[in-house]
Image 1 (cartoon, rainbow, N blue to C red):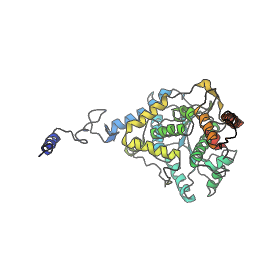
Image 2: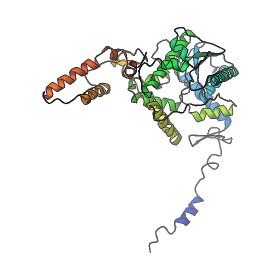
Image 3: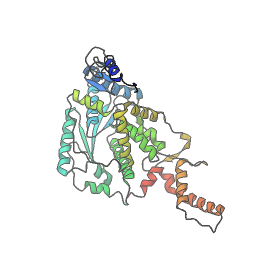
Image 4: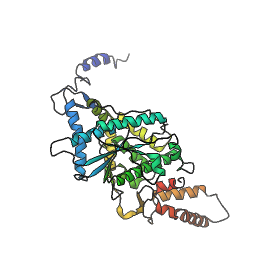
Length: 402
């Protein structure tokens, strides 16, 4: 009889005596100070004690701001507050930096804004949420500013409140009215993101702020990068995923939390005894839009392979746009519109293929005549004014807007 494997059980028991057990035996000391017992484990391999973790988190936040050298002393910075762990941690980072008595003290002036757009909640739930948001911002010793997203879209005059908002059940209807035609969820998601950014720009201008802080994390940056490429916004990747969005020459959007993930900030809030505002989340089908699908994909990578997300973010940082190919700015998103060249771009190739696929066969004319006919239709469709005024992705949204 075959005897292969008869000694497997014996070898396994002996080898267990020489294998390090993952957990207590492997992480007995903090990776930073090599002295204290770790209380935090990140990325399955980085263990930190409480002191080192909090110091490292604050240093990472201030280092990213200092590296850019964009913000000057006394500059006003609009901080976009959003419900959840990231914004709570961001306010605490800012408060710690402002309260320092060292040369590393933050010297700009934060202006906190909450853009209310939680229309899946009832009026009472929204009002309770606003009260909690005001309380949290005041606890961090900041002055709250409140803006209704729906009212900002319809009213030319920007209404900014510091104590309460007038909310209504019809707010969601107001937002839906801007879409005059049926629109798929991917384009609708993209349009609403553009409108939110434009509202924040308008608020920053009214409050005389030169910069805007948004609480986007590494997972969101990575998913936005893949989403942009999928939706034909590849030329806008540097602005939409980089540390600085500089498409507006007067007001720049900065992402000071792009080096963090949700687990880090959740630990940071717990160790600082912070309780972020929480609300009932909207249940969304992960396959309902490209944005949600990419978010699910990147979240899975972050959970199983943490280093992959950082690689995607670093890859995005290396992407740059050839400015010689820029034709102008999109009227909707303010992103670049690329100049037409003799060579077909992926956008033009897709449009040409669509026309060819939809063309009915006509065997009464020659292949040369069919080509001339299709080429003429392509030139007429692709050479319209809308293409010159809007980028490829926004040209798909434009027809559905009021």
